Image (tube, rainbow, N blue to C red):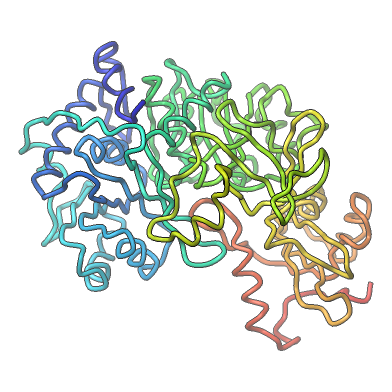
Length: 522
């Protein structure tokens, strides 16, 4: 299998079917395929040859969907850039990957001088926005218009498909090398569950298209010949409007996006009857938010995907029929294309119910980290990828993720998993969002600390939240300090950046400046 295969079939079988919808632009599969073949020719005219990396820094659009297929069509390797990164982080990924061609849209064009100054190897910038092409850049549309279609290079199997840089939540990002086989295996395995996409599906790209979660759904939709709808970025009203206008049937969202939709005051004003399936993942969702979502969207079939960039990205699926109280805290069972096990620190398999490190094996596991053989060897062992996530598997095969191993809090000699504490606190009606971290503590070594975002027009005291927490979890797991914040730091992939929360406290040792309502003696 290869990523462009589904497009070839769609052009042959359903050439007049709608392939992409972006704003007022609608294109058929015949038009979509022609533009991809022409843009691939344009890339070759710029000097792109086999295995060259071509990056894209852009909001979601129909051109993003073209880029993802035109680059392998031309023989190249995609390098989608995280739109939330600073110029320094973007420049690092461009230099590290040896990228020479960058597609950039109107939103990020002002950043171009900084990037070219920091990246001497970056020789060509292609403007892929709708505004005038800035001086010194090549026009995307001119490349499409001025080049005749070329034959598909048909990169497949172990050919490198893309370098996808990790979100950098635990340090500087690493380039994950995913092959054509990795991406198609994960996409088709997910589709094989029967609970996502289909030839008649209309899929909405509301999550950022640079991210593997959305890209995996894109790959599945390409394989099945379904329709893609794009909004530039996630904004609740825009997403709800797109669902209503285009009769969207499927959407992928991360938990922070779901929460914003559920809390949107205009939700009842939209006709969302077409929406049939919602895939969510990217970070842990609290039970409180999940139950509110199921109440807000009655009848919708929800599927949770647990995974990471290194497994392209799906490892497990919690299917709609398993979305009830008994399994809501789990990430589901191994996906059709995936094997899962849990090991101890020495790599020994653990028994059912024992907490250890979650490991994944299958054709979707990455080739390795770009130019990082030592880091690759540390996580790829005997065909298994060691995820760095702590968890366990129950007697029915359901996988429970308890925390990032590095995020586990050891307080008074007891292990506390932040996800469990966050789930308990999220059930309080005054809590809109919460992140739990460990902070240094003279008495306990570490103390459990909660950063809380309050729901609109709600108030609550730290003492009230402590009492609520004790109703659901053990006393030693209950936060000993609380901090009320306006928002949590979120990565471009929708993950809470706990490293930033810990770093903020490490920089501020003045109790007068510490926002915590310290209850360490409680």
